[in-house]
Length: 115
Length: 115
Image (cartoon, rainbow over all chains, first blue to last red; front, side, top):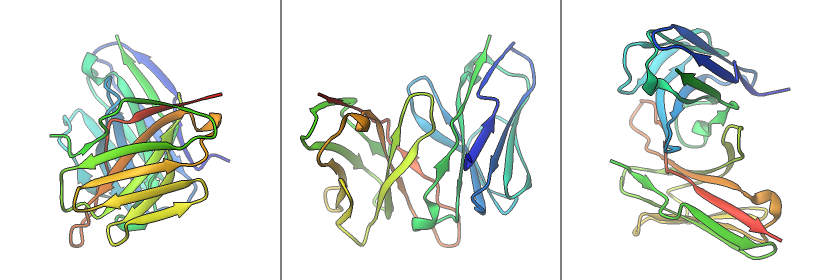
């Protein structure tokens, strides 16, 4: 039974389209995250939600909008997709936001290719 | 500005020998450090962590050492096994009063354990 699951695993789409990636965790964690791994394999945080409230919002274009309907779900919606959005997007969750509670558990990733 | 650096992109070690992966950081506010392992097409998996109040933490074959004065940490794997072949990411976080602490990742070191 997967702890952090994301769908879809692969997403190929045209420039200008709008797409969503879904994430669910069954660990009972309070905090969820979205990370982007770019072509240089650098993992960088985009957003974090704690109990459905946005707590981290890095410098991300406002075409990216996270939505957390409940603390077990954090979805990522991307408007007007651009070539530079092509990357692997990882969802993660943690018990809390500091020290050992900030140990994050990751999903398998969604590989987004924008053509 | 890369605050967490893994200067060796790859490392090859014989089975049964010790693997030593290194990580340097620049932000003196970091107070919690983690190592993740990542297989292809999977998300990062938490391996081991250490708080800045300690200089060593051991879990089975894995030991993490922290040298705060040098802003350096290392992961030792003894003995190395073929299944340890993966990309290893170092990550760090800084507790800020009452606010969320994000993980800052290094760029990873690819470990190959040969027979």
